[in-house]
Length: 139
Image (cartoon, rainbow, N blue to C red):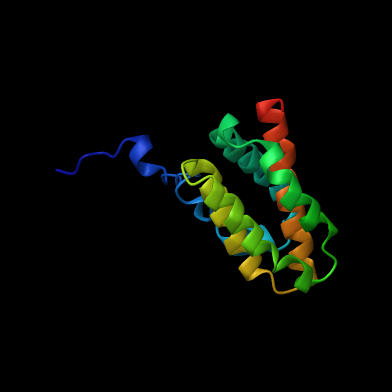
């Protein structure tokens, strides 16, 4: 006799946003590729949920200096050197697992930026994180 699976078991368990942030967002390609109009609200809701998980452990102040350089990037060569700045931020805050996780995700995304369109989407993604983090923390 087969047992019925509960609805919780049947639903696909979502990856932990702190342990696997890229998987939580559906992979590098889903972040860097164009988002369909019908999926944009779901995408932003995921970013908001991610920022709620980060909570006050990650301040917008910690991310602002990197974000200003990301926003100012016009060419791919402008964004790649940010990897070491992100590594420095993570290294200075090794005990803050949430910030380190965010830094690792940003580093991985930068490694995968290959076109100007992907750069633009990375910039928008990072801007949304800053905005929702500000919203969530009130900082």
